Image (cartoon, rainbow, N blue to C red; front, top):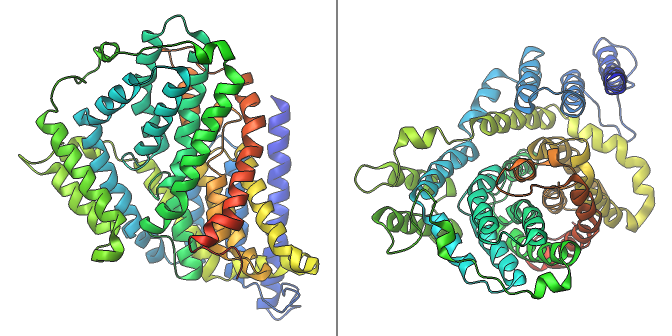
Amino acid sequence: MQRPRTRALVAAAITLAIGVALVVPAAVRAHGGSATDISPTGVVLSVPGALTLAIFLCAIWAWIFTSLDDTLVALLAAAALILTGALPADGFFATLGDPTIWLLICASIIASGVAGSGLALRGAAHLVAVARSPRALAHLVTAGLVVTAFAIPATSGRAVLALPIYAAIVAALPERAALHRALGLLFPTVILLSAVGSLLGAGAHLITSQLLAEATGEGFSFVTWLVLGLPLAVVSSHLACELILFRFTDRAERRAPLSVTLAAFTGAATPVTGKLSRGEWRALALLGAVIALWSTEPLHGISPEVVALLGALAAAAPKIGITQLGTAVKQIPWNLLLFLAATLALGMALTMTGAVAWIGDVLLSPVQQWGAAAGPAFLLLVIAVSLSAHLVVQSRSARSAVLIPIIIAFAPGLGVDPAAAAFASTAAAGFCHTLPSSAKPVALFARTETGPGIDPRDLFSLSAWLAPLMFVCIALCSFLLWPALGLPAFL
């Protein structure tokens, strides 16, 4: 128990020292002393900027080295910014009314109604029942999980929705232990990798978009994220599916026939056979209409937030709705919303006070000596760091809150498009499979009582293969695919 405590104390001392080193020079300059807080190219770090940077470093330390809740840390950082005058109180409270917050609230209400209608379970049951081989079953499960990224705006919510499917498959195939083991890894892996297909797939996506908008004036729309992220979501999910089959089942297991009938789902809360119920038809119509409107925003001009609001009202409306507002509100991830608001405030302070510009200017001067290789090398480094960041910062949203402001500060000086670098980082952050505690979907399937669970050694083995595979996929997308789709890697 002493080593983690010692490590935390050392990290705290280092963080404090860095904070003092940043704040003191700015304070000296403010009182007429030496301007030692000037970067090599003349960018000055103001007192509010130094305070913001010190608070940001303290938040990073708390996220990595303490057991404090991530949202609590973010709110404490926001409160510190207000008390030190680095951020106006109105600026912080305004983040709670940000359109992104309301997009997530309304999407959660719609998702609650769709999940409660039984439509998702019925669709999954019929999809699984088509499979006649382990490979077909695995790829059908993968395809179904990719689709859920557009219906449920959180990876943990999708994992909860998928658990009954996994339990039914395990119960229907009692003698296929190797297949159980592979599927136990497949479900959370695909849930995490496929999230990149939708702007609402993870809270980290919303954080990235808003931090980018604060810094550059333009974030990602639902359509833009869909066009860029869906190809990676589909390809990486199915490649991971093949990798899991190859690593955790033998040839005989993959060739052995199987059959999962609809009878395996008879214990479900809602029936999966017979005609669609009235609630399921309503859920299908509502979900289809909302996704269609989100995907065609350039044609009608209605923002995704307004579409989500109208969809949420329709979902909770008497007689025509699919849920009750009080029930749906309880399903809203308020913890994530507060975290999102607090990190938006932190990002706002970093930009407004000039702290981000100062960081970028100070740290870029030696890197720029690399010449033409600096930009590509930086982009590859962003991908590598983002892939491995889950080992020190477990929350996906916290990782984006830490990395994206720094990436945005570095990118322009190296000739890299900040939007491209931020998107690559967020896509890479979807890889968080090394430890059971690295992501909530992995933890849920590791602890489930409806199957064999996940052996930590299997996770490590999978990660050793999946990490380089994801690095190659995201690098190819960054340099080849995304530029062709309208997101150039370089300025």
